[in-house]
Structures are given as structure tokens and as C-alpha cells.
Length: 376
Ligand code: GAL
View 1 (cartoon, rainbow, N blue to C red):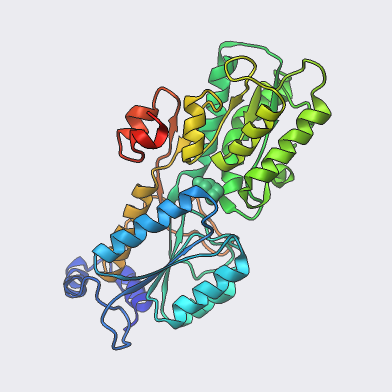
View 2 (cartoon, rainbow, N blue to C red; view 1 turned 90 degrees about the horizontal axis):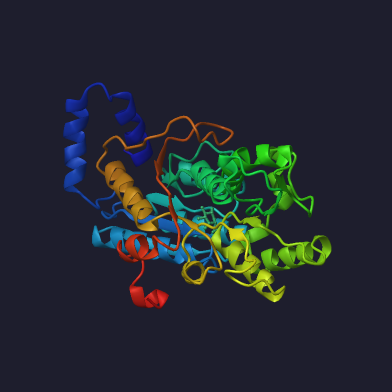
């Protein structure tokens, strides 16, 4: 009996816990045991990551691979250099190699329908990792952080730093950026931030000299940076500074959705002669990348929204154990993530703001970094 069909029967029979319990138990004895009648006893998990060029995915892949191997699973970890065709080929190979479960951090969640149809035909269970997979029914679970909250935290940080919630009237100059147009998360990040900031843009307290203020959240891709590329964010920021900031006009705030973009923006500001502690703007970020954490310590970035990728890996490993044991898979959100075909049962984790004052306690204290990594 295939894992997917076993899963559906389990879901259908949820009422008779005892029965399921017994079944679950027998599968549990075969922890790491196979779920397919293919004569091969181990469970093989394919792990598809988008790229090695964005720091966090290296951590995500390595941590999950280690967890699963320690638990006795066979794994195949692949990186796709941010190329969708390469990711599709890698997923096809994993299916051909007998994967029972696929964990997919998609590059473009709208491109995987056909290969996941093949996965379904081979009874492979699919977990979307960090980024939702769209427009297919063949995704079973989603594990991520609360993506809209990431943006909300960035927006609220800016409001507090400028004192806008205490009646500060500005005007302040803001330059907003958004993430990769093919990344489903990027819309949530932008919506969270823009829902907080746009009232101040409308009231004129926040001005956007470049004019690059989307009229609504739906137009977020107009300021999106493809592939989350630092270099493209740098040249975009250089263009804005050269074209819209004359004389001693300065940018006060930059909404950067993540650290790789923030790094490029910071290099553009440095090149334009901005000085940390003098006229350096408030800059947001996400991911607590090493270079950006050092920039936070050097007053070149104001905050980052940290997502402890270890906890995401832990949650996905738990999901896999539950799937293999035939148990109900733990989720905590069955409403938010509609992928255009169905609402995908999801587990959302909490992101948190990290500023200069928190780096040692939170990032070093939790073991995410060694003090020496950060020059502390
Ligand atoms: C997003 C992810 C962020 C950031 C970005 C670029 O999907 O949630 O943490 O890393 O991709 O990789």
C-alpha cells in the first residue's frame, strides 16, 4: 500500500485512533522503513534547495540532511543554482531513484506541476519547504515561517525607529524594495510591510523620491529584484541615488525584504559617501546572514528578521517521521496558504527581530553563530 494512499486512509479513519494507532505503531517499528512496496526497505528523502549563492539555503540543506541521516533515512540533497529547469530535472531524478518523500524549496513554485504529477503517480509525498508550491494538487504539506509577519516586523520597526506612531510628521524619504517576482514568499513579505507603511506614504509623512512606491500590494513585482541578487539591488539603489537625490538630499529609510538585497543596498550607500552613525539610513533585512550581521554590528544595517532555519529543519524532520509512521502530520495553519488549487496544510514558525543589542544574546547565545564568526 503506498504512503500517499496510506496517508489518505489514515486521514479518513482518523476517528478510529486505536486502529490507526496500531497501524502507525507497526510502521513506526520500521522507522526509516520504506513506505513503498518496492522491495527496498529504507525511506529515501529527496531534498531540493534553490541555490547555494544565497547563504541560508546552505544552512537549511546541511541541517536537514544531517537530521535525516542521523534518523536512518537515505537522502539526496540537490542545489539548482536558481535555475528552474535544473530543479525540475533534479526532482525527476530523485523520483527515478525511488524517493518516497520530496522536500522542495522551490525557485519558482509555479513551474513544478508536471514533475509533481509524476511524483504523485509514483506515490511520493511532497513537502513544500519555506516557499509554497503553486497551481498543483500534488503538494501535501508546507513548512515555513510566518512570511507576512516578517514584513510586518520590518514595517513596524521603521515606524518605531522614526517615531511615526508617536506623532512624528517627517517628511522622511523612503526607498522600498521587494524580493524575487517568482518567489511566493516575496509577496507576503511586501504585504506585511506595506500594510504598515502605505498609510504614511499616503499621508505624506513618508515620501518616496524615486516614485517607486507600488499603488497597491498587488503591484509589488514592480520593485522586485529577480533572484534576490545583491548586485542588482546595488545597481538599482545607485540609480535611485544618482537620479532622485540631489545636493544634500538624503535617503532616511530603505525597506529591504532580506539580507542579500540589503548587502547590495549598503554597498551602494557606501559608494555614494554615506557614513554609518552620520547620515546612514534605517535599513531592514531578513535571514541574519553573516555579512549582514557584521554590518548590523558596524551600524550599516538596523535590523534583520531572523528565522532560525534549524527549527524549520526540525519541524520538517518531524513531519517526515509522522508520515512514515502513518501518524497524522502536525500542522498549525489550514487557512492561509491557498496555492490556487487547494489550501495546503501548513506549519508556520515564528520569526524574530534582531538588532545590534540582540546579536550576542540571540544569535551567539542560540549557537546560530560562534562569537568568532562575527569578530566578537
Ligand atoms: C525567501 C526566503 C528568505 C530569503 C529569500 C532569498 O523565500 O524565505 O528567507 O532567503 O528567499 O533566499
